[in-house]
Length: 460
Length: 141
Image (tube, rainbow over all chains, first blue to last red; front, side, top):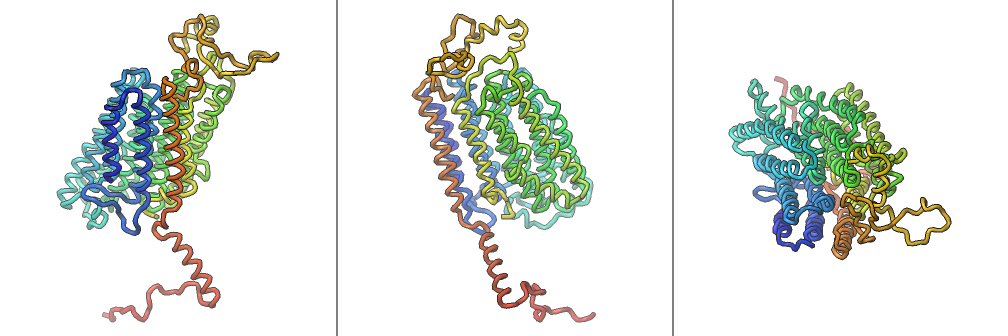
């Protein structure tokens, strides 16, 4: 654990002490080496549930894929941000990198925490750098509103979680995740217990986000700079899913009935956000709503508490992290050239930037869950286990899959195909950096086809 | 920004036409129309809003830095560590990871046992998971 955490912490002095010409190459090299070493986490020693166990941190089949994704994402964020921060004074660039690094540190500790309260503190801590990224480096005036929505939605939902965790600590004496699955089931009968149940889950449901409480997400995704959007879409949403998967184990007998409205809300959210996507004009907003839809499916998979549901949720979280981040990077390449996110203003890109179209195509196919990509495998496992729970969900999930394919194709055809608009005269050609960025997003996704057991979670 | 361009009509767009480079062609344009070979020249008279394409100064711009040496090295670092080490060597490492949870062993063992039982004519699996003679039932109360 420390051999990843300490180098990540050392990235902060690296960014502040490196000469200004070398900040970005050294940050990129440093973070890529950390990402390479994070692959070592995938070699678990054997049958024990947890490995690399220490006082505060450990790894298990659930947290390891998410941790590797987090470590992989930092170099990608650095690659993506290099261009739009190049016009800023050097110290501001260093500040930007420091925010990304501190976010990374909090996320690593959060995912590897064995104590739920440590996870909670880190969960909250990630809000601060993200807020600063959105409100300071966003491009439009709406970023202030976006930051406010983001902070207060998540805070308001997670304060009940703090209370619920303190109650749990009082009842069980320990919040360590290691013995928690084996603790005796609590007698949860009173209304207060039901409120406690809701308090445990609400923070994660808002973070995921669940459909009714998703308003912060399109704002935050759209207004954030590219690195902020990437980390939001790829990892911060998964914090919600991960937290839910950890907490489900103590919420036991109540979940059977109480989760019902949330499952329905999540599935309805898939349909609704998919429909909204079909009518979007703003490209980043479309991708943001697409994230809500996919995470709704993940939430449904987690709430029904079956092995396939959990496995599908984890696979979909990893695959969606890579896909959504790739789509946001693609949207950013458009934005850096045309300075607009309106899809209608940047059409026919295939004629102008044909190599980028191939990346758009792969990312779009991943988003609409083409087999044999892990996106489909995760979605299929969730849909199947939901069908097992209730046959009626197939209407919602099937319709949702259809609409997802619809808006993904709509996004691709709108940005890539068609005539080039009259007002686009010449655009800068695609940078090598952008191709590298997208390759590093999509090649791991394609490689996951060959070895999905890495991201199976506990079933493995 | 682009909507303002739209409103002012083609005049301003023609001025802006000379700002950005689509691609650099080294070959002489032959008798073919110059529309097939896009122009590559420094910003001419027009107002460019100060946006000079970095490809003008450095035709091999990779997108990392305006200094060509740093740009080149940044690209090399990114590709080497990102693709050659992380994806290729990392991928090989993951490929050769031991059989996690003994799943592949379990499949091989199951196939071996099935073949063996088919050869010996034994049923593929016994009806009882536990040996019935070892089960101690409570007496009728």
